[in-house]
Length: 567
Image 1 (cartoon, rainbow, N blue to C red):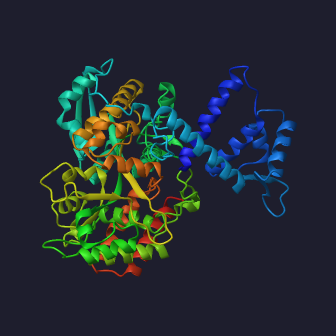
Image 2: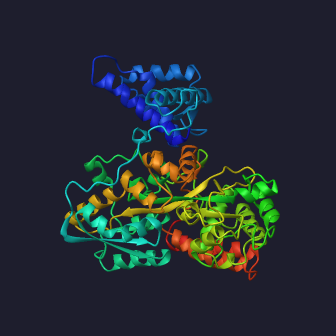
Image 3: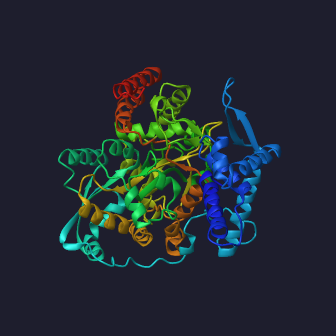
């Protein structure tokens, strides 16, 4: 089970116990469980657990709480550790014994829930659903129904968005959308870099041109810190909006420093796409490591007419910059010095030294050398490729592999004329030895520009909430958007029948393989991309050495961070 699932189990059990203990006379407060629950929660969240806070969480008088804590220490469930050599204060930590006991309990509870509600087959298969996901909707979702009360045809709702499948659907079917929302909807689409520039310019104009903006997940930090988009915490609380149906990675990727700023509409992971038929003919296994990617690329390169081993997103600027930071994660390292937490890195609190760039490092050198090696077996247009060009080359049958965002898989998943149709296997990014396999989650969330005024902000929220509903996600999927941030949409039988991709991504989310830390949402992320887009491209073009490119990029990003007073 993932860390997020384990936390959801804690919340579920605590709420269930609360019904019997706090709302009825059927049970009394159980201080032992309350201490264990609090200790595990603090451990999973990577936060300090003190004796005082544990006693407070027990829900009983202080003396009784201290005795229960002492019992748990004596039984080997909690470790009492001095906070420094000279300190008189102590911290508490769950021991391996407690962690294993709790994980066993959580797995058994998950199995019981799965069997009770029909989420698993009753034969011990407990990994086929995500605890807390909205699987009660694993039925055929209906065509979208109109909003109960329309926004008003006397008003226009303008949405600024990228040139991507979901937003193309919204634009192409704007007349349908007008009727569904009871207003006039205008969708403005721009390429990625132009979209970012227009969001910034709209803010400079007073944030009056658009009611909603589609935000690439790594931009969240910059736009939040500069007051360009509206925090949603108060609206979410007032509306009692539930996020349990969203994939955790997509939902958390739409937040910054603990505040929610967007609702996921088109999140998409980057995976490795492999032509399974070509691999089978060559007797190759689908790669799970970076070394295996290189071996497969070398073996399959020019093994057939007009076939390259791989096609890479090496175009100058944002494309190659994204490639570098996402591949850096395959070597176990984020682009800045995030604090490790569990099997990943902490995005909830990014301060001080966390902003220091991690480009000129052993992992950075290994990443650069890996990309240079791949270039030898890459399609000749790779150095000019962006996301669309890369996927077009792969879908036309000119490459055996590519790293690709699932959002763009429709060009071969839904097009029978493509040589890749029905022949592609999808796997998370292969990892370097010793690193954990993760795939970066990217794509877009809808956000509200700051300062629209109360009435206009409420109208924008109503449209945003509507456009991110499960039945709308299904509608986007049926029109070529092969991604969904909602468990219920992925569980729809008609959606599953379209392509195996939905099931693959859903399973990766359950295993914790989709992560946002490879592209951390810090305010300087756009600047980092600008630096890497120039230096790494020059390296791949042979105009710079690995050492010079990494050293120069490290220095430039470090100067940006220092100028911004980060450390």
